[in-house]
Image 1 (spheres, helix red, strand yellow):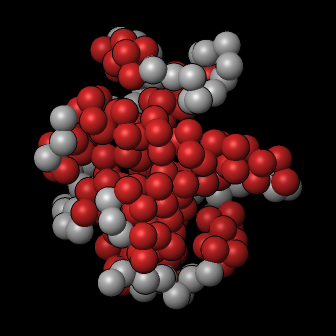
Image 2: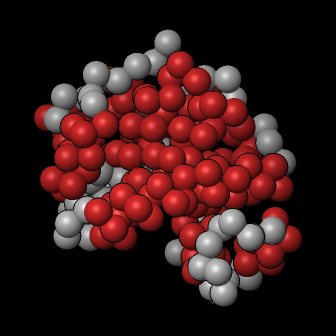
Length: 197
């Protein structure tokens, strides 16, 4: 069973030590919530804290070292007291992009698949009158996915590869990740309001 020795407070402090941009904190909190939702859904409820921590810290090195993303993460994580399972999980979400550490555990495959997709869903939500995922339909997300000009920084190839690694249809990954983002949207927004930047 995968567990983390880091408390939620320690994890958030570690993320904020290396990330000052509110957008990067928002993304970390969102992927944390998404990963916790997936842990429950996929039968890993007893590993929920570990899944969440991997989501929270997955981009720990991105703001300071965008050109070395996932390469600098191990050092930052180890300095912060993270265990090797967590280091592996974080690094593996850059598989085939920046590093050759492959996702092995189902949690790592979910992180790889959901990370890029949360960016696309978030961008699509911002275009909606509600500015929310709560009324987002799969069909509208699929239209945004096909429009290569929309959120061009979100790699469709990475999202497709993520679905393939899980053995899921792309529609399933999209639908589940919308539900995961809905589940944590209010909590993430509230925490962002309370944090000081």
